[in-house]
Length: 86
Image 1 (spheres, rainbow, N blue to C red):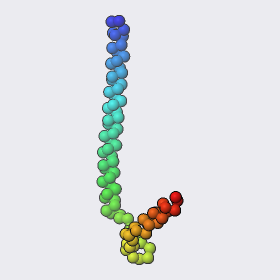
Image 2 (image 1 turned 90 degrees about the vertical axis):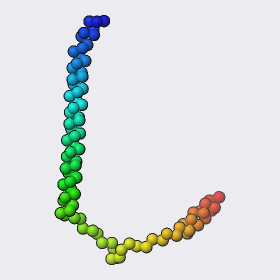
Image 3 (image 1 turned 90 degrees about the horizontal axis):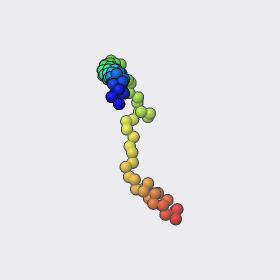
Image 4 (image 1 turned 180 degrees about the horizontal axis):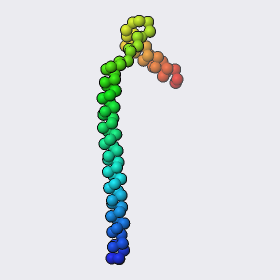
């Protein structure tokens, strides 16, 4: 049993070293990706200041359309549909 443990030690060392290299590689990639996203965000903000998008005018030339806030007609239609189904 002691002989098998001695044979496993180099394999475990190699496994841990490969794991460490893989984890460092992933960490480095994620750090580079986060930094590049921050840089890209700053560049896009600056470009939006330089070249703003035109604001589309609504059809009809007016501002906001008035919206009815009274839902009593809708509620009455729902109640009528519920009682009609019985």
